[in-house]
Length: 445
Image (cartoon, rainbow, N blue to C red; front, side):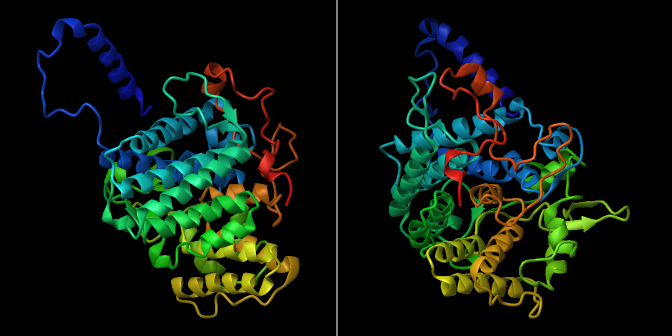
């Protein structure tokens, strides 16, 4: 695993400590770092954020959301709603130890610059909010206290509120700083950190049902597709698109899309809520149909999951659809239609198809379904789609996966607390919530 070398390093460090009295100051090097600088640590936080939003979490969410399918071995168990707690160990630990903890170290650094502090607060808040959305109650108030071995679990609502507050605080610090300017390395692209932060705050405000806050944040969010907050990828082995790495370099045939609902919507097997002749173009960007009829991810050059394809972390399309839904839910159907049609116009430009994505003139629940279904297809492979289906009580009617021997009839409601947490933290919730038990924030819509 990724952290084997870390364990060796920790072990070696302990040996050195035991010998410290014999070698103290023997080979002191005034140029050697004893504490990593915050402008270096922020790069690790960014990498963790990319991993959280685009690696295992995103793939699991895509299968549970019926946007993709498990095709082999471990992923077959995901496809039949039979996950193992051990599967979540790395996902949980990486987010807390590499992302949240390092962001807090930066925030404790009195020498850190304002932009670095702001970026750390934005990413820390987004990671906490996403963990709460995925798992429910999670460690928060005591999560990064080095003196506490068994942190308490805070309520999902408290974590989400604190996380959004952290993002907002970060926005106030970053000013007009550009994402592409670096601040930890050239692994991210987009407009400004403030724009990206506002879209993230809008995302999590929407998850809590605070539509007024979602509108307020999104009104200052990502303003164009050119300003999408994305991770940058290349052709080197360790820098490739994370879906490409998994589907081609690591686990071929594990992740496919054969029986996925997204495929059925895009190939015409299931009618769209909003007529979309351009579905073929969208389908071809995401998927490939092999001669055998099997549907796989499009990892070819130009495909959505190619080696060098950027991964969206927050986007103009998401921002517009947040505004569309939030305005609908607050009684402004005209505004909701306007934002949905902004997305349709963006699709016409993206696919150079003036007739492929006609505007909506719908109202009532038909309009709401069009908004939510557009988001479901526009954000294929993004964790937020799993959040949306659960918080809206599956308003758009995505069918369940084949459930095999589980006999489960409900839609997946949460990630499972990892086995590592069950084994080590005495404060883990008891009784343990089950896979089909809704989190507190997502029980009605």
